[in-house]
Length: 237
Image 1 (cartoon, rainbow, N blue to C red):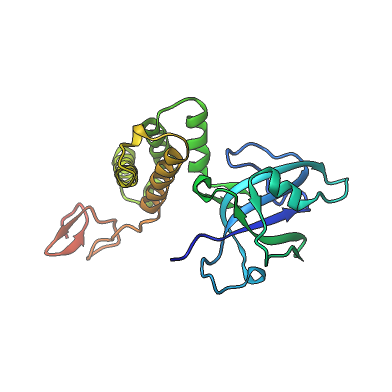
Image 2 (cartoon, rainbow, N blue to C red; image 1 turned 45 degrees about the horizontal axis):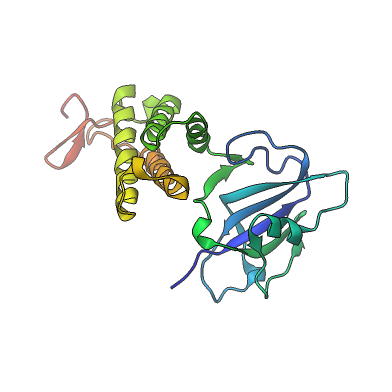
């Protein structure tokens, strides 16, 4: 059985990561970023692991870039992480990296996917709703609304309401499945369990947004239905 492996990256250049997991602007300090590794395979050596865009934590070291680099191991230890015995810090491409493991693997939160130094928008929307005290179900509603609001409707051949309903249904279905695996309903979850449920909903929402619409078998319009097993537009071609 494989276990998720993680990489810690000591950021020593400004503007590499712009915001934290909640979308808040980061200070110009040394940062320690923990991500899922590019593989979980145990036979891959620590020095061969790479960081991914699936971010677990963005840790502010509170040490300005104008100061010497901090003791990375000390930063790790103060936040519940450590290096395995066979892992070493390696300097590469303007940063320091090593494999790390959590002191308590059961408390590691689900990852937040980053792009260009910032979390994807739906993770930020979920964080805003969580900060406002919304229930898990209402956080998922906020995510679905934001997903439809920011989408280019012409790409889907749907009205806003149709796209919103599709995203909302997929997100709530995914959340229900994830909660059911824990023996709970979505709104019964708290803490890390609630984060897992919302992460499942966000994944489902993005999957809907990434779906490519079918086009009519006859013309180049977006299909609105099926006829004789083939997609057709509203003209019924």
